[in-house]
Length: 304
Image 1 (cartoon, one colour):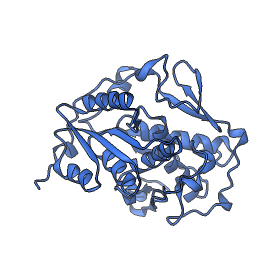
Image 2: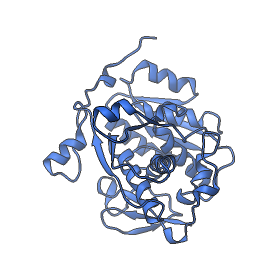
Image 3: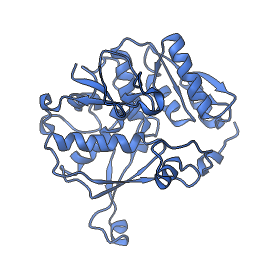
């Protein structure tokens, strides 16, 4: 295969044929796996591949994604979201240019669709027919939305406190929902145990390395949309770090291929009420400690 796994802690390499999530030696906390490509063998010529909303994201970036081909039934309208220029904002901040990338245009209204798309493609390629994930809402909605037209069973583990609007969204998509009497951490653990027990494919964020490969497509799109002129600064919302890590990887891939001449500076942004990564950075910790999230989004609920 065109890629292999590498543990970010011990740097041990694993064959891509293995269905691994984390390094068996370092464990789930420190043993995050990175997908490494043989970039010297990759040929990507953007000018020869159509770019736009009508195209298939997996097909467009196939040389730089951890799948061998595009699964036939998977043709979701993911990717190619607009990059909009804002002159007034640029002037207000005394910048030459100010852009926003609007991933709310994706099918489930979330950037998580990028991760779900690549993870689903990997599941189909390895003949998995049940995909599970733990979520507080958005990742669950993304997975449920993209698997709805497919012959795949989706199982979602969510805290019982999930807003009713998000829960109804999962039910509409025909998802099997497991309400957990506890927080997201407990839902995450139960999802992992169920996947191991029943042989399900685990799409959960922070454990599945294919999610990162989906998120990096936003960086690749930004480069193409700016005609391979890289922004100086990019501000990115950060939960557990999957989005910012994915974007960084996307820019590094294009830089290694000689398609861009520099790497941007990425600025991580977190809500004060859910700032595990920010606290870890301030305190010099290598692994963030869990925090009890308390944000505007957490307080929103809709009565049905």
